[in-house]
Image (cartoon, rainbow, N blue to C red; front, side, top):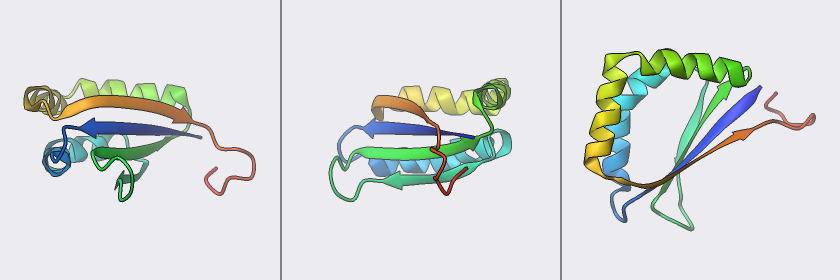
Length: 106
């Protein structure tokens, strides 16, 4: 099992705009193709312009298959286009996390 841990940094005071766009246009496709939604979080202390979301996969191959299928859906590509045009994102970082043997998520 792996966790895809993604951090988005939005333009200052635009985190809410990003979350609205993501919930309306991205979430339906991600739930359809990716399954394994662990959660989405905003920072309460620290960089208030950051949003983190996490998805669980069996392994890297599972992640690649699911994301490839999602990118073949025209609806998902509409979201990608809208996100680019919005210019809400300043930075995006992805980490693939692997649980240690004693982790409760395994």
